[in-house]
Image 1: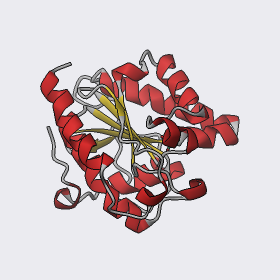
Image 2 (image 1 turned 120 degrees about the vertical axis):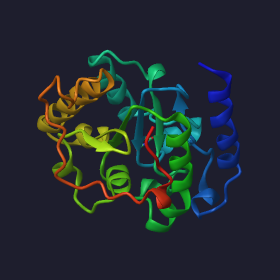
Image 3 (image 1 turned 30 degrees about the horizontal axis):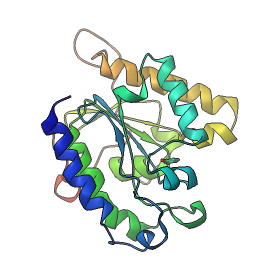
Image 4 (image 1 turned 180 degrees about the horizontal axis):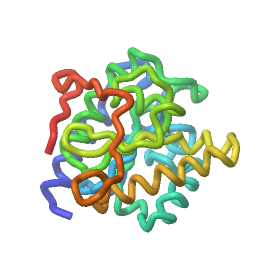
Length: 217
Ligand code: URA
């Protein structure tokens, strides 16, 4: 891991730790900036920190995090190999959904994280990150199951682990399929002439690079 990569993220982390751009800063115990390898091939993007994350300052340390670790393990990945962040970096009160103005105020951190890490694959967990990064109103049930070509890399939307914990066995099965896509995308086994796996495009990723500041490799 290069020291420059660590420093690039640490500068941004320092800004986030002092952030008061929205009301969520008032109720937080800790800013949950993100965790993992600053040069990871895969970045996972969740929704918002919960209680355990707010206490520890680390994303996905609760039950959802345990399931995430399990699914990673099933495709031969470990948490230390990936980077994990959220759409908003501070816990919403009583775990309510993040509000549009909070997402707006926070999204520059996610945008900068993605640019500084520059991963091969971005995985959006649940509706909030999927809708933000694919810039669509279409829900996760319809957009998942496909790896999208997205700014010179792949984006794989899947359910939030919390949906699998409270939902049916089908949700978990669908997540396992999507994690297989993540593995294929990391290994370069999606699309391309030597492979007829389709890289679908049912929802046109309509991200304005000026707005999110995301550019291809
Ligand atoms: N759920 C999220 O979306 N993010 C976390 O960090 C923990 C739970």
